[in-house]
Image (cartoon, helix red, strand yellow):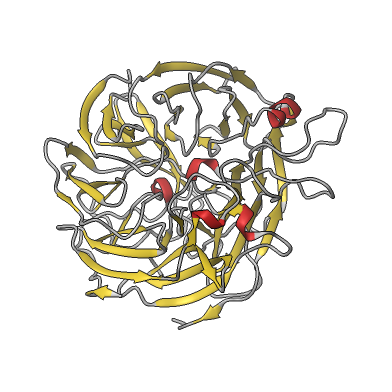
Length: 493
């Protein structure tokens, strides 16, 4: 470990402690008047590996984790390294049967910070004794000290066939994340959702394609974290499974799943085309988007958006309505929710879809030709990063280009920026780039730690005729998607 302890952030700063800012994954940053992309606030020094996850912001620091299994805390004021902690040797890409992450696979999913515990959680793919193993690690946000570790490979699974790709989140005192396979779907694996208590205890695991002879059904969502609704229930999207004939029983794949905090399935939706989707690798690859009138928007690689009733997701073919040809290319990652509009992460450029609740309808508002990574909203702009490494700010009403800045090469085609502590931050290939963000006049001072747990929906941003409705943070929990073993507690608080 190198560097100095992280200090508490000054009053009035904001934090971004989970993928897309909130357990509900809305991606809306409040209290920001402008973002200056004319010049960088700072660029970090090159870090020791590639960056796949979204940066997080808390306590006056920007946190990232690399594919070399190193977690960094960078000073918000200038990007200097406050501390770094190398967890363990990563897995060489050459040791895996397939995949597209090189040269090593370490921490891929976006970490999560529990501000009340001053703890950041990551899942590291480690090489121990020449073998791969996935380990949940909790670190002190102030010093980088490792506080707990726990192997999270499911019983009987082949670790080299697994990739922990989703972001992590916290729900009901547990860390939650998802697992799927490596790029190419080689080997035998099953999709998993896992919940592990922050202070220890046996993990709970939900398995997709669980029947004898079944496999696949990845929970990966283009890097998005499981979505937590106002009741604490968990929503995930599932990729293609191994069953490709309608004559066979439905295998639970190619779907949106609603799970309780204890990972019991209480609802699901899959299109009637699920056997064909499975056969042609048409994953449900976007995290379910929770809109403010009790509905859910689901989308996947087939380019079709489905509108679901959140109280009754619909089972097989039970959508309220659907909209075809939303995207011209693959669609992967977390969506942006602005009131009743959902901005979907089409790789060809994001597409804004408007939800009309009664009668249920979906309609395309605009399609952009720039960007493509999972979008967020800040300072009246939709921010998205393209595969060309260009950060663009789009008009949320029309999709027109308003701002842009080059980041350089990016590690993957799912990068997404974050906002906090007076900055917009984004990960390039092996470094973090920051731009100044100006607070809105009269914006309430945000605490350095998260708000208390709440089950009540809160309007967090308003502009023009639209408002962003998200559910308040559910404090004190982190859930992981594929965990086994027991916590080795390095230090208890």
